[in-house]
Image (tube, rainbow, N blue to C red):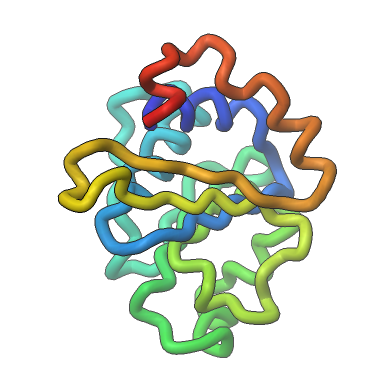
Length: 153
């Protein structure tokens, strides 16, 4: 997942939104953490989970990254209080539990649906990207350079 996150990080930028969807323990935070570290160019960067703070930000201006975990929110109205809706379209936004966004979800967002590969969750993860047509070109060749086993799992 770390290699895939690093490869995707090179294809994302200001104004992009990545919606990370999946059950508890599917790897949403792990993926976001790896992607943020890749964007920062620091594999050891402190990247805490935003579970309790709701939003963590890194950098400013066009290089800004917003990482949000909406699990504890009950609806879109609470999201407005975080400032996340204002960050859409100008910062790179990574959103865990995107179902809480409702109508606030950007139409041009890329979704990564993660799930456990096997019944115990120990067999790896499955990831499926979904998004509007422009994402197909942007993601073309994404798995190149990632070992086949990592690309499958």
